[in-house]
Length: 147
Image (cartoon, rainbow, N blue to C red; front, side, top):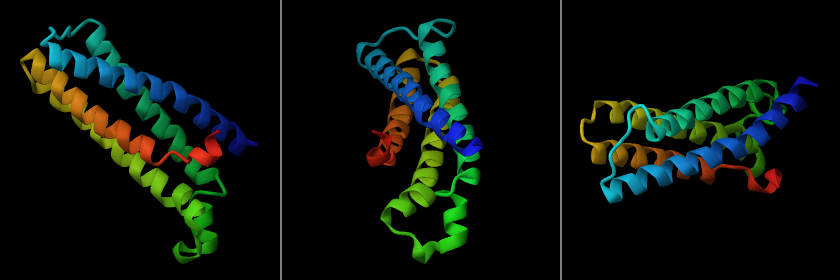
């Protein structure tokens, strides 16, 4: 029962995370290209921070799912790495590893933007690192099971 609840939460929460992350990337890229002022206490900071928080929360939910799911660690323990087909490998290895890497890029972008003094550099840092994280996330979503 916990497995299905966590799986449902992880699946539906992913939509929210992706939408906010896409919005944060476009906001940062737009601010970078238009030399817009970065509002440290306004929309720009809050949007970037919200994307960071939601992506980390999704990671925690995903890690919980990894340990209770028959498609996560249990699949590796039962079948071994050599026994996984491409779908099982995606769920047990590629999806978790690449998504952790994506969250690392998003976190680096957030940390590095705080050290920048110019608005253009803040937007560029967030835009580039968040975009890399977004691309990595999109590359390892199990699309066939998601829709």
